[in-house]
Length: 372
Image 1 (tube, rainbow, N blue to C red):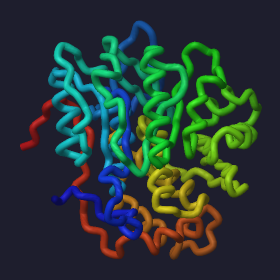
Image 2: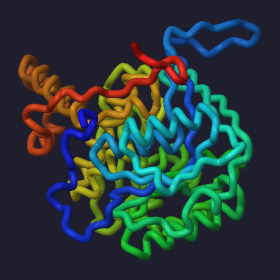
Image 3: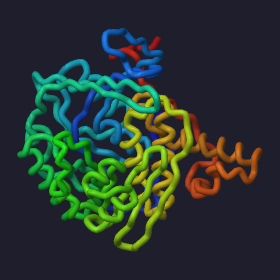
């Protein structure tokens, strides 16, 4: 198929008897409708016109798509509505991205959750709507399939019963040798109770953003938060937005920090999910810690230059094209301290020398759009 990943980052370590799944995910799939090109936030009582619009699968679909485009065999367990929105999201993920949806379920009478995202001034504002999600036992297998890795969401969310079930599957996955990477969402209760992160005892890594990390640890800087979190999990990674990311590996004592790439952001929707996907890829491929951080930051930077959280996730062809351009610019201005060439030299041994074109799926304005 023309849209298969250009390379397999785990080719050198795959062996007979390995799990069929590289990364297992579970969560909520939204239909995302994204407005871009707004000069400012909408003003009460007025009508605002956006210069751009797109639609794409969102929520956990952002990370699933990013992982699949990086060549990882990705399995997603999620509920899908039996409406046209659900049809669109299912087809985009299964047929368009090659994601395994075997453990996912279509739920009769339940319509797909929808998020409208408005991007302006380098940030985004979202409005979501959805009916109560079906119980997890109806949509998520109690025992996750064997996998090299899984991504789990911790924190205060969903029904109490579903949270207990999350703890159970995370523990079961870790017990079978699956590396569990945890992220966390915004705590709308405002409690930021450290007990909500008890699942970290099963996890190999935790990847919150700076604000989440500081609130849970009661610290006053992201770097202090990373060190505090590393006391609870082998690897703590804190994303710093436009400042990059910092990581503390408590097992080896290693720390690493990389700056963010300076790009013109069109739509930051899903950038955090793409960062996690890049970091998981580098970790499973056993890259050095600083290279993993840099690669994850690169993937996130490339994603924000297009709109649509999942459909903007880069594949290897886009990464290779960026690297060729970066080296060409560096050749014209050698020694430029802003050049990323030194930091990303590890890509030379990784990327194909002649990347073939890859027909990326982009977000389109209309659900069910049929191109001529």
